[in-house]
Image (cartoon, rainbow, N blue to C red; front, top):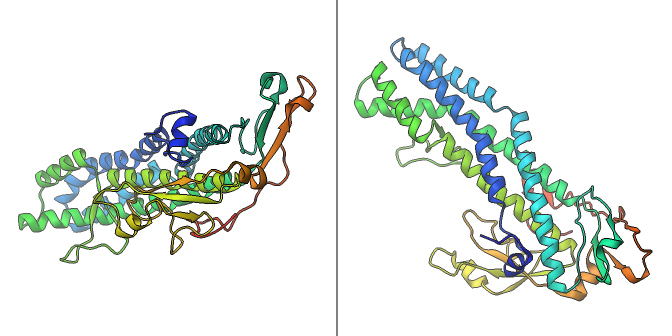
Length: 346
């Protein structure tokens, strides 16, 4: 895990680790879905089991409805926006602190759309500082993050009814008979430990053709962790390219779990505009643990970066340093509905 200072960010080449606090906060928010489904299942399923198939189907629909009411689209938007804001604030502070340390020039403030002014008096003896210009990229990354979370968690909600039906049918096959009230109590007890079943819809099936069951809790946690990582990667991409960093070095974990092609790319230099062959970036592919070590060139930062270069010796004492509103990059091609478009360039 990265330490909370500029040294840690330089060690990973300004490719910061995702914010685990934001991830855990998002997981806690999404846990409401599992809790609501479990409470409804415990209340409705045992009695429905003895009242026929129609009663059971009605109970399953009611469980899904109650779970959906417990975590609406608005709830998902609020939770994901809060998590994104927390991660962006941390990423912004650590990235610019690390970059400033790497080039030997202090970087003051960040690229968020709203920032306080910094009095010159608080920066005396620094001589020269860089001030990042405002950027639309962090907000674009947040908007994409919220949309992705709404879509994927929506799929989990929709899968609850099918997951329950599959789990109940599989239990009946195992026992070789219709489930009793006691059988259903036993199933609910299992779900209390592992989570209410849902299913993964992306073309995955067992050898016998049945859908792949997974608990709502585990599925929601996987989505939260994966999307926090994706959001973090989007922030890294936009901030590195806006800072004038043109290239990165592919770094892998160099163990037996690394993909063969990623092992070949180890220590090779790639352009941020195109990525590795096929438009692939470290962390893009499922379960990829690779990361991008930025090639930090001071002259490129000063020449191509979105910064105001301020000579403090020419400033009036105590005058607030302005944050430039101009030249804010607009990059809709980089952040699409489901995140970064591979190979897109700022």
